[in-house]
Image (cartoon, rainbow, N blue to C red; front, top):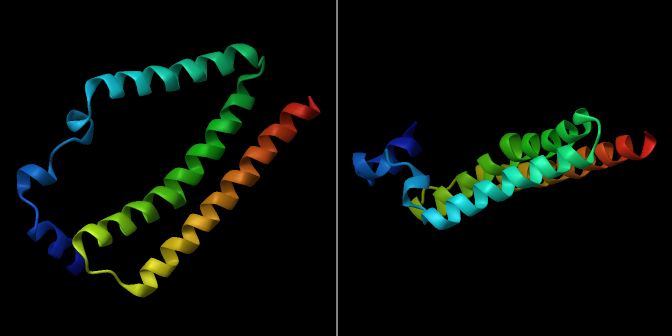
Length: 117
C-alpha cells in the first residue's frame, strides 16, 4: 500500500478519477472502436464456427489482461512516479515474456483448430 499512497499523494482527486477515453480525441476513439467491431464481424462472417473466433479472442485477451497489461502499467507507473522495486520490475519483464508465450501458443492452437476442421 505504501507505493499506492505515494503515487496518489502526487495526483489530485480530479486527475485520479478521470476517464481516459474522455481525454482521447473523439475521431481516434470512434475509428478504433468501429475498426475493432468491424474486424470481429468480418471474421465471424468468414468463419462458419463461432467457437474459432472465440479461440482467437481468448488467446489475445487472456494474454493481455492477465500478464501484459498489468506489467506494462506497473512499469509505466514506476517510470512516471518513481518508487520502483527492482524485484518487481524483473517480475514484470518475466510476466511480459510469459504473456507473449501464452499469446503465441493460444494463436497457434486456434490456427491448428481451424486447419484440422
